[in-house]
Length: 143
Ligand code: RB5
Image 1 (tube, helix red, strand yellow):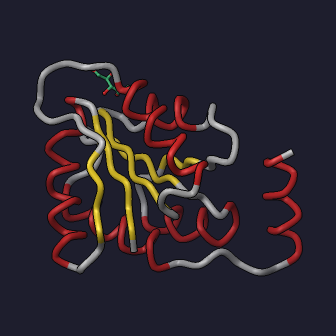
Image 2 (cartoon, protein in one colour):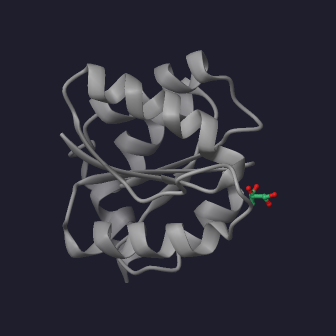
């Protein structure tokens, strides 16, 4: 799958680990930065990546900052983006089934790399539920 990935300085190390993990699996990864651990604004990476997801450049994106919260708030400003802030496997699965989330956000200061890899794998593998109630609710999000 083509996957867009981005971080700020707070998510840099976790992004590196997730990127290597996904590349090993054969996914095609496009990295939106940051390129190092120098302090930067998560907003810029989130906005650019989210706009590209909304345009259909790739089906899924992953954004990582210190907590995952700023990335999530910023990405969800873009119409067509459903960014889910997730730190557990149950939610990773549920947000795909129920919300058809197209961006996953996590905190590099919150979750360890091994746990994060399982969260990412679960999120990527789970398809949106075709159940009418979920389709209806996602349509309501999209207005
Ligand atoms: C940066 O210190 C931190 O504020 C950022 O990575 C993120 O956690 C914001 O939500």
